[in-house]
Image 1 (spheres, one colour):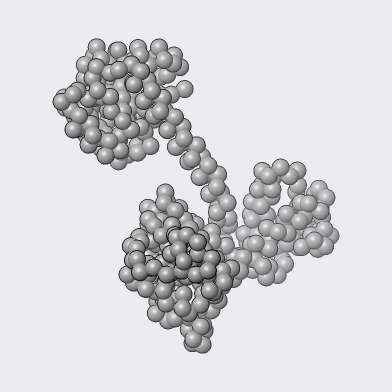
Image 2 (cartoon, rainbow, N blue to C red; image 1 turned 90 degrees about the vertical axis):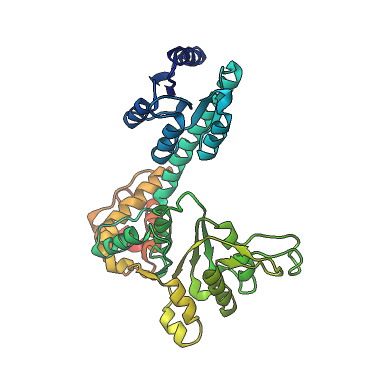
Length: 384
């Protein structure tokens, strides 16, 4: 059931619009405001699926209402209602974020079609937000240990900036979760988050992967291809395992960070990019700099902020919370709920977790598949 606000200073037009909407769908909830000031007050009190808003009104006009709404309720679609003399203003409203405009007197078919399209768009936005929240649960930072709380505080301070971040920590500790949190809590959260595993790409292909290539640049380059820097434009590029990147690729990444410009392989074209770079590694970069495996100047470019993710052995207080978290994920995927006996939980809490959180996740899934209910201490010893 959609809730719609009509903002119009002429009472007769307000009533006509209301009747049109209710004839179209009697389930609509219709509120009305006679001027811009009243509209802003009502917008503070209720959430709307659609606003029909006149442009010329006393006190505050429709443009002022639109500006206010876009700043505070940007997901609410606005259909502006304009006289023929207001068409220039109506076009300006579109540029400001209005969904569309309707000329007075409104054509019934055009009005209803535009309303349906606007409501469909609102539903799509809501569904995308729901899916985003569902996806984001995969990147939840689970735990209450002091070590993890320190990481959270750094993320909260740094996320809203464009500062480059180097995330360090052992394999499986959750470095990609920290990178995702930094993106989701930033002003870039609605823009792309592109992840590149530098260790998984052959050294001879990493430059093409990052910067793209022109047709004919090498044997298999049958067409132009955008690189990950360009695909991440406006958003965040996460360079995972950057310590495994070749020195030649490091030099090009350094140049891209210095100039905010990339050049595809085999092309003389220079492309400007606006990308926040977050890097991660499980290596000791300082040692790699000393042995000539990593460029010191690139390290200083990447490590404006360094976030060290603790190993699971350093945050044992979180193990039972992580087990509960992974158990719920498995149940959501269709597995039968299981509990862990005290003996099983004690064994898991005292293990040496060389594979960190990733290893724990695998062990919980294995015990769900192979273990009884409740899962016994013996099963924890056998399958962990």
